[in-house]
Image (cartoon, rainbow, N blue to C red):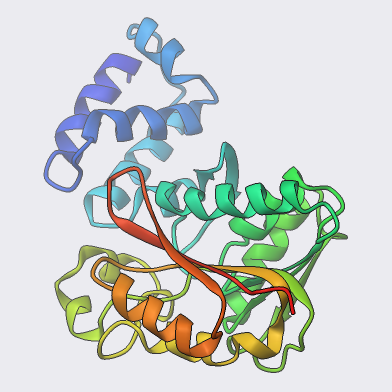
Length: 281
């Protein structure tokens, strides 16, 4: 099989299951062949090894049958870096990079604040990205899922921050104690009744998606314990779903009276990030 033939076959095979079948085909073949996408496009006549062609066919069929491309690849990009992913963790989304950008802005303008907590860490992409950008940051990353923590540990090792990121199995803020300057959380926020109609819920772990009846149960529970954990002057950043901005801000005001509370908009123009900065007592 030649490169051009392989890409054409994969494009047709993925047309019914992907909005970007040709790009997906290139990404898979680049991973399997060890070549860059640009090289593949420039050398359609190049012959694949028999082992490469077999692996490529199997990978394409997995995608065509509904498996998410990042799970087939075994990795995905977040904040300019590759992170291992698998069915036990949520696939990192570009909109979550807004949370990282806001966290970095706070840390860089407050060099004395170097204690951070990432709740529901999943693959660890948020905590690890922060550790790589702020070398003296001390991070605790928690998750309820032991399988997710194993994946986060592998990512921390890959990026050389295993000594900087402490991984803890915990249910939200229990049994964590106070004193963090920065709290980050990308928690489940999809209403339970909506899950059945969402393709993402058929591919990715429901534990990372199911936000309860109205989609806010997990977020509200975290907010109820925020006063105990967030230091005076500290910042909490929580990703929220569409239509949840008003309820999230109201709950935050109840949890931390006097805090500076606002919602930041993502690049698509959607309310995406709840920002809570506790007043300095």
